[in-house]
Amino acid sequence: MSAGYLSNLVVKNSSKFESEFNEVYESGLASSPWQHLDQTSARVKGVNHTTNIICNPLYTVYSTTLRKNRLSVLGVLQNNPELEFIISPLTYQLLDKFNVPQKWSHQIKGLLREIPLKGDEFNSLLNKNMGAVGSQHRTRILEAAAIAFYAQQSQIPIIKTLVTDDAPQFKLLTDDLSLCWVPEANSPDSF
Image (tube, rainbow, N blue to C red; front, side):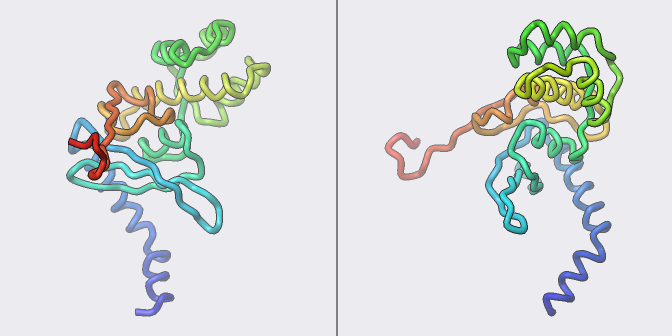
C-alpha cells in the first residue's frame, strides 16, 4: 500500500473513524466509574500541543489539544472542544475554591443562572458585566462555569473518579480526584 492510498483511506473516510471514535469513547466512559487521565507533549505541524490519554482497563482514547489547561481537559472529557458554561450553585462553590475575590463572585450571582451558554455568549456576558476582571480571575470564572456545565450535562457519561497526577489542570474537575504516583521500579522507595 502506498502512502497516498493510506492517506486517502484515512482522510476520505474520516467521518467513519470519527463516529467509531465517539462510540468507543462514550462506551469507555460508561464502562467504569473511574478513568485514568494523563498528558504528554506532542508536536503537530511543528507546533507544541498536548496529547491527553484517557483510559481504564477496557479502552484507551487519545485526544490532542493545543493547550494544557483545565478548559482543554474539560473539552477532552466532554469530547467537544466547544465548551458550554452555566452559572449554578456549583459555580459559586468553585469560585470560592478558586479564591476568586468576593467582588467578582457577587457580580456573577447577578448574572443569568441555570441557562447553558456557548463560549462566545458567556464571554460576551462577562465582557458586558465584568469588563474590569483580570485575566487570571476571568480564567477561574470560565473554569468554574465550565465545570458546573460538565457536572450537569447528559450528553456524555460524567467521570466520577479521575485517577491522575497532581497537575493543577486536573483539580476540581470531578467529584473525586484520586492522585496516583507509581514509584520507579529501581527506586529504593519502590514496593
